[in-house]
Length: 253
Image (cartoon, rainbow, N blue to C red; front, side, top):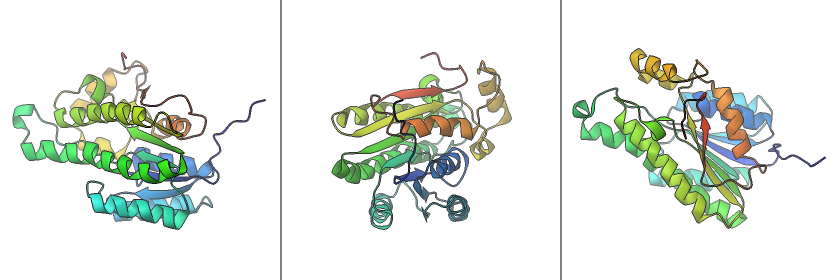
């Protein structure tokens, strides 16, 4: 029987937005699979709690309470991960904000810029920095968390939808740039998932999104983490620049 490679023993994974929601579920799943984990989150308390949870599974865990939109902080975090944990094998970019529920004419340019800065520019900075050690090692896996909103658009969430469409497009570009190396870069497009991020969304919008899911319910962070685990493993060897659906049947492409 062919050996499987979902075991992440000896691998080092960086999870942005790792203090809660999808990011935390991914961090815990990776630790269960044997990986050492670096938690990146703007919330220092969430970083601490997540790091303790990973450590409780017997794996090395470090944390960085940084703003992913700050280039120097991202570059410093990347260097420290390699120095302290020995390598940088996987990156999962889950840090993001929804922004205010509002029509375009009610949304300020400042609100637009902030969502794009966190969800797209911050993610790009993390990808860009990770590619340094990954290119040196000729191995790496990057998984960028996009959204079904980036494919279909959600009303009154224009900045968020645009930012996630950007994540999908950027991932396609980067995946092709490193396709002839040992690095694979993919994105996923979840529908509505039970996470603290839902606290930023009106009940009206949540009901609208759930009504479009044929499975009839939101997803769970653990279901998303299962897909991310495959994409961050050695088993994912022939897919790069792709966007994987995890929308309960909502996606039409």
